[in-house]
Image (tube, rainbow, N blue to C red):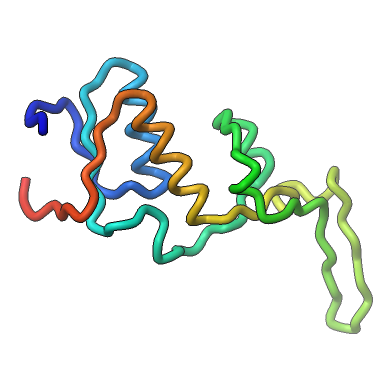
Amino acid sequence: MKRDYDIVIVGAGPAGSMTAKWAAKNGARVLMVEKRQEIGSPVRCGEGISRAWHDSVGLKLDKKSLAWEVKGAKLVAPNGTPFYLGEKMAGNEVGIVIDRVFFDKQLAREAIKAGADLQLKTSATKL
C-alpha cells in the first residue's frame, strides 16, 4: 500500500467519494478510508435528490441506482383539499429517488476510476 498521499478522506459516502473523484481527476494523490466493510450499508438518510442538484453535478446515474422518479407533489390543506404541483411549479420536489446502497458504491467506483485509492474496514484515529 502507498503511504504518500496529498489528501486523505475519511468516509466513502457521497461527499467523500465525490471529493475523492474530483481531487484525483485534478492530479491529487487521494486515499479514502471507510470504517465499514461495505460501502453504502447500512443505508443512511437522503434517498431523494432533486433534479436540479443531479443536473448541476453532472452525475450519470447507473439505472440500478434509480428507484423511481418524482414528477411533482401533492399537498393537502388542513380542510382536506388537495393541491397538485406539476414539474414546473414543484421545484425541488421534482427529482429522483435512488437506491442508496448502489448509489454510494457507484460514486466510490467513480472515485477509484479517477485514481483514488480506497481502504475498507479502516478507521481514522489521529491526525
